[in-house]
Image (cartoon, rainbow, N blue to C red):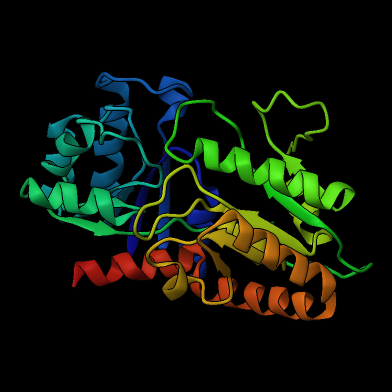
Length: 309
């Protein structure tokens, strides 16, 4: 199978496709238009997409533009007329759903989302939509070589005051864990305005933090069916025993993750893990194996391959 990736990022997608034995061509649209969300059908980009498709003849076109309306309807039509199955995918959540996704859905074969709420919204408008969770890069996020015992609790979470439904919840979790577990708890992220908060730089630095930590906590900005930030993947992939605010689909997709419906439950599970480090390390080890088996981009590409049949 030939795959054309109209990419916003995610080079790990291309690596996964090649691992599966597929041919991949990548068009990084930000090389043409810059890094910010933009609108407008740049002629150079349209020409590049169409010319690449004409010579490469993709079976699958995987598009990630998020809120940048930068591919013309005529370009989508040309891709499909050439025999390609076109998927536009969004791994993020915005509320309310931006109208651009309805526009995309009218011109592609599948408008895919990493949560079921948006899938149902697009289906209600008469377009095909499917659930496709995000993947991760297993060459960066993995347990690594154990050089010392894991310790402590990590919560990686940016803070955007008043912006998302779970903003206040995330702040309450962070402050509660900081108060109760003191030096055993570390908060990483931006926007907190707290001197003790640390910042991560590269993906490698984030992975190293997870590899040193015994427990990771996950609370997303939204509580939606089958939606979770890829941090839940990265933490598990690095071998953390992971605790998450519960949501529909968590048990099914991440059976080894501790499910909490209250801050008190998070605290209880964190304390149990810290008091039983050997058990927590075994959970983390099993979580890393399960995440590698079920949640890389290889798995997501195989899902899309099923849509073509």
